[in-house]
Structures are given as C-alpha cells and as structure tokens.
Image (cartoon, rainbow, N blue to C red):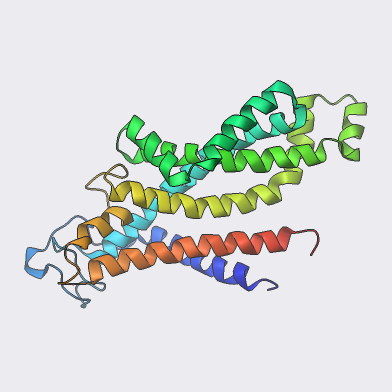
Length: 265
C-alpha cells in the first residue's frame, strides 16, 4: 500500500469496529457486579480484570466501544449533513447569504470543538442523544469550510458552465456536479471528525453530560477508575488504551486518505 498511514489507520479502525461488534457476541453482562473480585487483575474469569464494582472490564470496554461508535456515527452524520447543506450553496451562490454564514461559521470554528460540544450539551441536558447532537453541531463549521471552499473553486469550472448552458438548475448543479467532486475532501474531513467526535463524547461522559449509567462509556470508565489508580491500573488502562488507539486510527486514516485522494500525487 502506498501510504503507511492509511494501512495502519485502517488496521486500528478495523480493530475498533471489531470491538464494537464483539459486544453482541461476548456473553458477560457489562453491568453485573462481582463484589468478591473488585479491582482484580486479568484472569481466566475476567480476561482484562474488573473495575471498582467488580464488573468485567472486557464486557464494559466492548459495550463502551459500541456506544462510542454509535455516537460518533450520528455526530459525524449531523455535522456532515448540516455543514454540506449550508456550505455548498454558500460557496456556489455567494452574496450576502455566504457572507453571513461564513462569519458565523468562522466565529464558531475559532472556538475549540470540545468547548462547543460542552456548551450545546449543557443547554440540551445530559444523555446519549444530546451528546450526539452536541458533538454533531460542534463539527458543522469544519464541514462547512470544506464544502464552501470546494464550491468556490469549482463554480466556474467548465463542466459546471456546460451544465448551466444545458439548462441545469442550481440545485442540480450542486447535487449532481459539485457534491460528487467534493466527496474526497469531505471523506477525509469525516475521518478526522470521527476522531474528534470520539474524544468529545468521552469528555462529555467523563463530565457526566454524555452517555448515562448504566450504559458503559469509555469516558465515564476513566472517571470511575481515577480514584483507584494506586490500587489497580487496569480500570483506567484498558478503556484509555482502547480510546487512544481508536482516535489514533481515525487520524491516521484521514491522513492516509488525504494522500491517496490528492490529485497532485
């Protein structure tokens, strides 16, 4: 493969997807306590050890990966849909609409995505659905910038002028001619946004604004393990490693896709 980043990123992302799918196959209840084996190290009964309540860490990481994947998919879907729906017309049509939207999005883009997610989550209240929407809304400015910049660069392209000469409507030009030519950069942005969404979801859950108990969450697992680090590192090490490798994988995948889809290469 031409890009080592793409190969390693695909491997890590594939492993994270397998973790999420394995939650449907692993028979252990992630919320079942075992008070006789609290904070135990890895053993045949508990392959990755147990948490402060004696719950199986492997089961909780598998279900936490599944929940993080669902939040990430829906959040990136929200950010992609709204960002492209606003950015394409703004870049193609221009005018006052573009100026107002660009000013709003640049203002939001100047703020950290996690800060925006925290703001939206605090306004909507805690919960998995609100965290999906909060993270998704925080990703809109990034997708808006990619879609707008692409529309600006392509609106005077010969194939666009030819479509207009044949009587194509602006909506048809946007959907049939501009959007397909921007899928490469948008796909790269989606991979990078997925990594940001995983971190934001974990941060929201760590602060109590994300996925609520009893559903496992990688961020809340880290918070629950924080006070018990001197007694056992496993409750923090296992979810922390899973989250770190997933974020690294999506970032490497985005870098690899950027190299692969770059026409100059």
